[in-house]
Length: 278
Image 1 (spheres, rainbow, N blue to C red):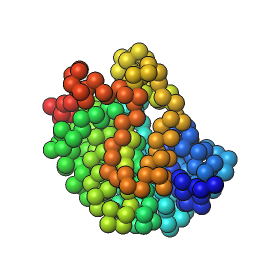
Image 2: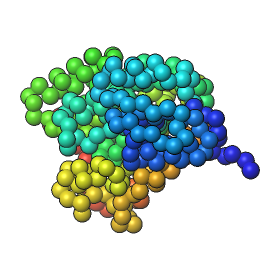
Image 3: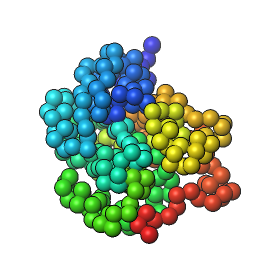
Image 4: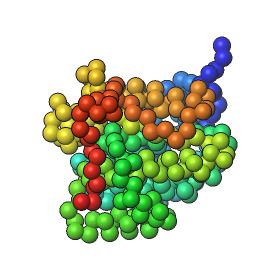
């Protein structure tokens, strides 16, 4: 039988793999024969994983320590780790969701990713219409290194009124923008970078997202009126990084059971289409 997904013996790194869609992705990739390495705030031993690392990715030193032990060549990277912003402040949320991914990419992944490798990041439908607000994102994107990027984040919150939920929306917009810029750069090595934008998903963060939008009934349930399972988000990520998607690059993929269709065809006003720094 032909292996169309082509994960057998591939070296794969997944962040946020202790639970939810990250865990579902790790389990799926083990089943597909990949050599899987995971890292998360909570260490979770998943059967078949080569090694599971505990790391707080809000701390640069933790990231450095993990990458010292990871393989020098990585075939596929899945950037899944993130927080909702309900239990974290603006700076911490933006650091975990964006700065950590930017740092990992610039310091390690860009050099270690194999030619013809693939990368997928997790954003959010909370970043819908992000491309209409690039001007306010550019200072964060253009900052060099961890310290300079963190300074831009803290300077943007000098008045101290930005919430963790503001940080969530900002960080997910930044992930989209940054990923597409890097997809353009790494295309020279035939490395692909894509993003999924999940709708409402039943994970450990579901209650926090429900609080964010004013109740469970307001979570994005798509046109089929239910939340996604973590496995359905894993399906999308595993496909995008697989041998079945070798001509797909620079895509921000809505994975929301059609929730965004009424907006796209102008049947309802656009959600989240506003500047964060108003």
